[in-house]
Image (cartoon, rainbow, N blue to C red; front, side, top):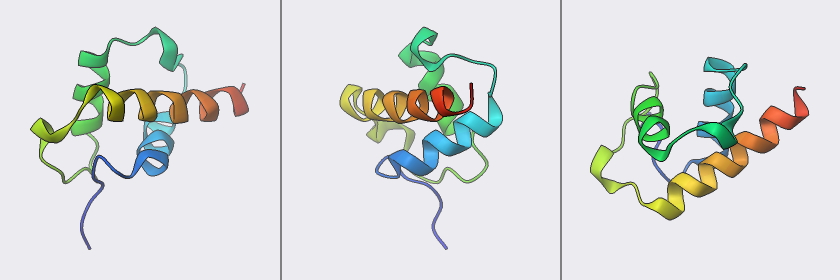
Amino acid sequence: MPGLTWDHTENIALALQEAHPEIDPLHIRYTDLHKWITELADFGDDPTKSTEGKLEAIQMAWYEEFQENQ
């Protein structure tokens, strides 16, 4: 089974919420967000294939998860 890719926005957001439940996603730099995504155990995509738009979509999906868990 292939791992997470940049297009798995919701699944990445869930994984980030599980890995960093205390972090408010709106207070993270994209460089750190990129690093944390590529360090996820299930992430299997090319790290260079990210875009600002994909990172923003992941950040917003993660923020929704973060809000639901507060």
